[in-house]
Length: 311
Image (tube, rainbow, N blue to C red; front, top):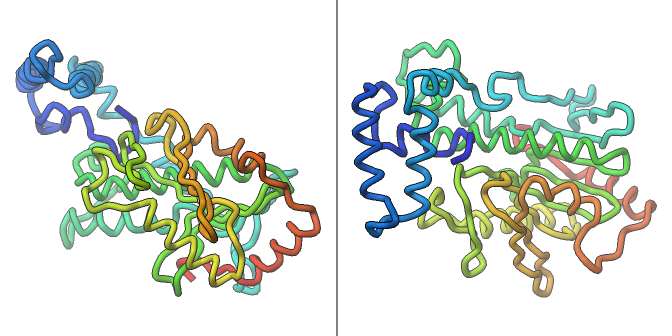
């Protein structure tokens, strides 16, 4: 079970309220152990989840520690980039030999989280701290997902910024006449990549060319949807992406999942976050690296053509 805001909380796993008494927790734990134990035909993964949930909230001390714990960086002001004085582009941040960065990674997802949270809390309700652990964990999972996505986008942006001066990243890029967006566009010697940062709070797998998992709905098609957004952006900018990349937390998948490109369609690859830097630096196997002149020319075209989702 992940520490992701989108993941099921120990209380949800055990099927009790966050305000449940110690006796209610214990009864729920024992009931679920009997139901999920593999020796009686239960599911091993569910059995493990029940055990982990109990470890986190089964004693007064562990429960108090869990209830106090904040999600990584959720109480911090998200990293922002400055606006250029002309207003045409958001300015690049560059410290030392870090990559050029434009846009506001995670900005739209955080705003969506805050809007939905206020709507869920009720009109006229006052929310002193929208990142309070108890408030986050009591919110519906679809609301928590937007916070998890914001954190995922910010984590990707931090990785991209560390790639070095030969790379440029644009974040929250508008695509398809601003009806959708591409989380990150990354340009470097290994190519031009459209990147989606996601965190559904659970593992995924590739089935019939689409990502599926318990945390995804039966009608969800994230790979297809993002491929459509990337293709719309490529058409608008008159560029071709080297690959479309979906980056997930390391505990969401063990190894990269690849859908090979066909014809004019680029390869789509889903990677654990720890593999992202290597992919963006080295590119796809057998791929030629671009010259400095070509990268510089393409960066100028992107800089002139990219618009941001909140513009």
